[in-house]
Structure formats: C-alpha cells, structure tokens
Length: 70
Image 1 (tube, rainbow, N blue to C red):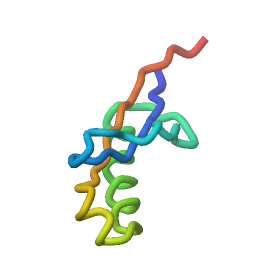
Image 2: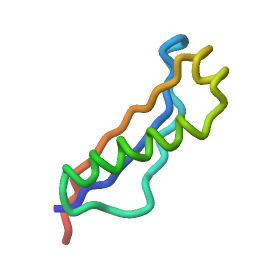
Image 3: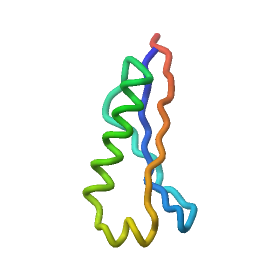
Image 4: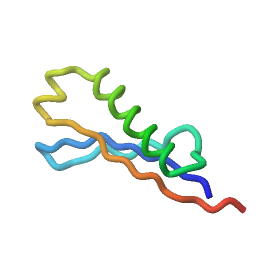
C-alpha cells in the first residue's frame, strides 16, 4: 500500500478550510506520511504573515489516504 498526503489550511475563526493540496509523491508508510504532513505544516505556517495567522487563527488539516497499487 501507498499513502497520498492531502493538506489544507483552515481557520478556527471562520471554520472554513481551503481546498486540499495533494502532496507531490506517495509514501510507503503511514508514519512517513504523517511526519511529512506535520513538517510541511510547520514550514507553511512559518512562511505566512504572523498577523494573518493570528487574526484568522490558521492551522492545517491533513489526511493520509491509503491507495492500493495495482
């Protein structure tokens, strides 16, 4: 099995999330997918404007979806 990472930025103020972005490659394990999601989330939030992140209380949401290999 392989895992596909999808990551969204969400606002705790509005309750809305941006459409998910599909990560560029698949992962062999759930753990690798989840760790990449967390690392990518930190980098993304760090790159955003502090004022916007704080005003909208932005965070990320991710899923690692299992895909069968045929």
